[in-house]
Image (cartoon, rainbow, N blue to C red):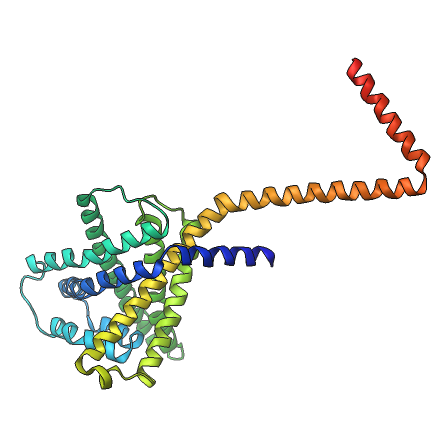
Amino acid sequence: MKKTIVFMKGLVLKIGKDDNIVYAYQLTYGLLLSIFPFLIFLLSLIAYMGLDATYILELMKSSLPKEIYELISGPVLDLVLVQRSGLLSASVFAAIYAASGGFRAFMKAMNRSMGFTEKRNIIVKYIFSILWVIQLAASILIALVSIVFGRQILNVVATYFPHFPTEGLIEVLRITVPVALIFGVLTLAFMFIPVKSVRFRYAFPGALFSTVVWIVVTFAFQFYINNFANYSRFYGALGALIALLLWLLLTSIIMILGATLNAYLIEYRQIQRPYLRKLRHRRKETLAMKKKYQVEKLVEEEDPQKTKFHALKEKVQDLLKEEK
């Protein structure tokens, strides 16, 4: 219990000391500028591969607040319904470049949260962020393919086994695949985005924390927006944009807190834990000496002459050792 209290106290102090809210605002700005270019690139790839992009809309509708979904779904529907020529044209590459800005902001926030100094030059950072945009898009495509083929396989199974619970399994597949995708992407991000690579055992806790907390916060925010808050009434057409900004800010805070948790775990395991182990060892030595003193005191009270004899015997032994 004491270890947990000491750990949580140190974590809270680190979160307050690192000015995480400032980095969260910077990351929110980067994500806001990159979210629509990334959707353009992702939907272009989906259309190029012949996949059904409505799965993206279903996923967004089930996981995003109503006002945010309505704000994003308009451009997405335009890209889905209107067939464009030259899918992988210069505009798509421009979208990749614009979307990479969010990853550069994420790189900066991760390095600051983990106490690393950025030493990579600007060209390497641009290339690295563009590769991460492509990697994230590829991960989402793999998740979509898994959902599509999973549904097809379950439908085939249902034709041979009519009583097989295919609908329930499809719903489980629809939920677990995005969650696994979020956790996997965050784990890789916490491992490889910082200047110094982080081991899986140090990246895992922050990724798990960010995934679970993000899902809980997103659904709580969705419930709040859909049932209580009505930003459109107060802000008009800007209501959806303000809701999007708040959601991106919450997302940024959660990701930075996950990185801070990883940084504190590294610090705790490599610096504080050996120090605490040494303190515990010293405490044991002190308790042992105290216990020995108490025993000697009890013996002295029972037989003072015997205690004096032992003390004289030890002095004689010390003198003999010095002569040798």
